[in-house]
Amino acid sequence: MAKGVLIHNPSLGYDDRPERHYHFPKQYLSRVERLVGDWILYYESKRNGGAMAYTAMARLLHVRPDPARADHHYVDVEPGSYLPFARPVPPIHDGTVLSGYLRTAQNTISAGRRVAAVQPLDDGDFWRIVGLGMETDTLPREGEGEAAGMAEASAAYVHDGLRAQVTITRAMRDRAFRARVVVAYDSTCAFSGLRLVNGGGRAEVQAAHIRPVAAEGPDAVTNGLALSGTLHWMFDRGLLGLSEGGDILVSRQVNDGDGTARLLTPDRRAALPARAHLRPHPDHLRWHRDHVFRH
Picture (cartoon, rainbow, N blue to C red):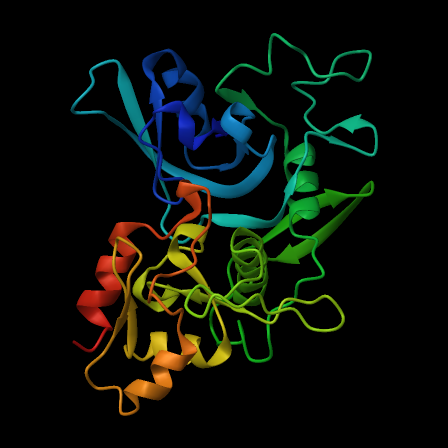
């Protein structure tokens, strides 16, 4: 086992679902097999406006062949292990290339190595990047992420030259999830279309899981919606839903249809991220309609 980096970009044409699996050509099979059982970082490449940064971490479970393409494979992600960073981490921080594999003697990024889709990463570099990725001033709202018994295994990371212990708790996951959802939706409630920011510049929208964590929903932006408190409550209780096409659905069990209509966008169309890969995944929306929404 070893830690590493998987280069990901939605525009590359691979069948990636970062929270579930990574799709790669056969030439990287041996490299990926060495990473199975350990943690990896996802790095979003620059193609078509990519973040050019480390964006998430996950633990790899096992490799399987692609039944449709003989020269490709999948590596599955351990359920519940995927964790998006609160903020993307550029490959250079404070003038230093964070990956020793990419760092040249002149402290620049190796042009030859940076194009590899699968890259090794040592423990120190890995946990330093994780530490940087989890730094954020965007805290969860009161009561978010406080469910008992949701702590994950503890792990060590290196930050500012010091090794420290952190526990990847539900609260930490919720904080990172909320930060990424708020940025993806530009602090705008998807159902009302209102950009909710207080006088201190802090976003007031909440991050709603479409498929709850308790029902094995991932902490992925594609499983999230930015919603105001009232609309979040209604969505979680099945009084509101969302179609794959972006239409806001109102349950027949809503007892104040006119009042609810005034809370929503005039055309009942959700205000979703401009970048398609950040929008809700159809699988999660379907699950919510099948298991939560009150038809």
